[in-house]
Amino acid sequence: MEIRTLRYFMAIAREGSLTKAGEYLHITQPTLSRAMRDLEQELGCELFIRKSRSLPLTEDGLKLRERAREILALVDKTESEFAEKDENITGDVYLGAAETPLMAHIAAIAQAVHERYPYIRFNIYSGNEETISGRLDSGLLDFGLLMEPANLSHYHHIPLPDTDAWGLMMRADHPLAAKKAVTPNDLMAVPLFVSRQATGRTHTQNIFSDWFAGHFDDLNIVGTFDLLTNTSAFVKQGMGCAFTVEGLMDLNEDRSLCFRPLTPTLTPRCDLAWKQDRTFSPAAQVFFDESMRYLMASA
Image (cartoon, rainbow, N blue to C red; front, side, top):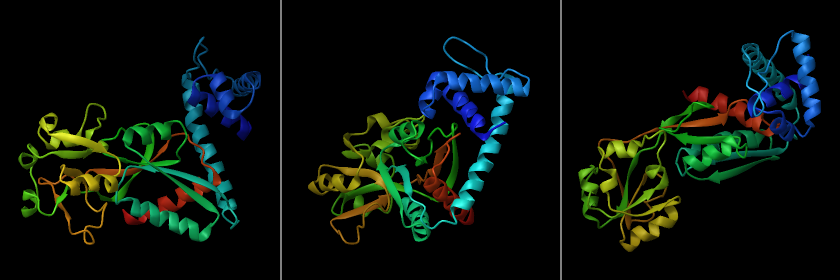
C-alpha cells in the first residue's frame, strides 16, 4: 500500500467522484480508477458504492478513511518536522477573518513563525462568516476565524483564549454616551450602522437577534458595514451609531467618538478553524504547529 494511493483514495472520498478527484490531483480518471481497483484487490474488499453520479464509501471504505487520515497526518507531520530543519522554508499562508481585536493572537503566532522562517508570507482576507467559510470550503484559505454561532461541524477548530465584547460606537456628545452600558431598549429608536457579522444568520441562529429578545427586525438600521474605520466617518457625521466590537479603533486618540458596552454583555467565542481532510503546505503546516503550541499554552 503506497502513501500516494492513500492520497488518491482520500481525494475521491472527499470529492465524491473520480472526475473531481482527478481534477484536484491533476491526474487522469483511468489512473485513479486503476489505482482504486488495485487497492480494493489488495485489501480484499470494496471501498466504494459505485453509482452513476457519485462514489459514496462502503462500511469498509469509511473504516479505511479514518485509518488513512491518521496515516497521512503522521506522514505529513513527519515530513514537516524534517522540513523545519531548513530555515529557508518558503510559501504562503492564507488567513481569513472578520474585523476583530482577537487577530492580535494570530499576529503573535505569525510573528513567531516569521522569526524562524522569514520567507513565509501571510495573506490576510477580511470578510464576514459566510465569505470566510466559503473560502475555507473551496480551499482558498488555510485558516479562518469564525465567531459563534458559526457552524463548525465540518471543520477542525480550537477556541481563542479571549472573546470579543460587543457594544456601540457613538459620538462623544450622543445622549447614550452618558451611560456606562447600553441596553436593548436604549437602541430601539437609535439610527444604527450594523456589522454584517451581526446581521447574518447561521442555521437560523443569530445571537444578536437573541440579545434583542426577538426585536432585531424592529431596529432602525440605516446601513451595514465590513470595515469600522470607514464607517466611523458616518458616525462622526451624526448619521447614527455603529454596532460593533470593542477595540477596533483607538478612541483615546479620537476623543470625538466613544464606545459603550452592551448590558447584558454579549461576548461570543471565536475559533481558529481549518477544513477537515486538508493537506497543508509546508508553510501552512509550520503556522498550524505554532498555532497549536500558542493556543494550547493559552488555554
